[in-house]
Amino acid sequence: TPLPPGHPPGYPAMFPGMPPPPMSPPPPGCGAAVLGGFHQQPTAQDLAVFIEYNQLDPSAASALREQTAEVQQRVINEGFLTGSNKSAVLMSRIRRIRAAPLETAAAPSAAALSGDAVARFAHENRLDGNATSVLREQPERIQRRVMDEGPITGQNRSAILISRIRRCQS
Image 1 (cartoon, helix red, strand yellow):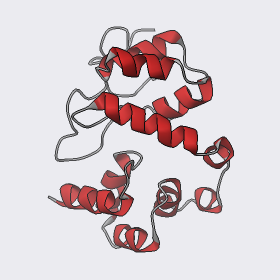
Image 2 (spheres, one colour):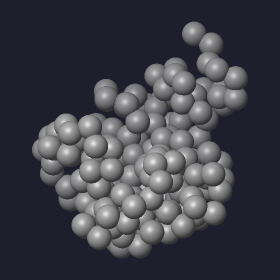
Image 3 (cartoon, one colour):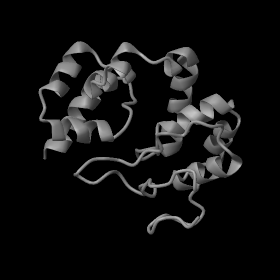
Image 4 (tube, one colour):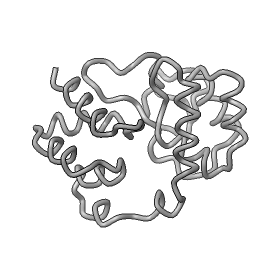
C-alpha cells in the first residue's frame, strides 16, 4: 500500500498514519512523533529505518542490533530519539530499559486501567506526586501537549516535566 504524503522512502508500512520522524527537535507547539503501538518483534528493516532516521553512529547501531527483540521493541516504542548526541541517548535508553524488569513494563497498572491519562502518564514515567500535581494543574491542552512528547527519559524526571510544561505554555 502506498504511504501517506510526506513519509520518507522506505518508511515502514507498519506505522500507518504516523508522521515521518522528526529531523530536528519538535517545534514550539510540542508533540514529537513517536512510534507507539508497535507490538511485534522488530524486523531488520524496522531497525534500519530507526537507525537511519536517528542518524546513529555504527557503534550505537550495533548495540541496538545486539539487544533482544523485547529490548529492541521497547526502544522503538519510546519513539525517535531527541538531543544533540542521539547515539548517547540510545545507549542510555538501552541501559534504562535493560535495568527495568519486563513484567513492570508489560503489566497494566491501576492508573493505566482507570482511563485517567495524567495518572497513566505519571505512572509510566515514574513521576513523583509533586510533578504529577503540577501537570494536573495545567489546562487540558497543555497536559496533552506535554504527554504527546512521549516518555520522559533522564535522571531528573520532575525537572524535565517542568521544562516541557514551560515550553508548551510559550
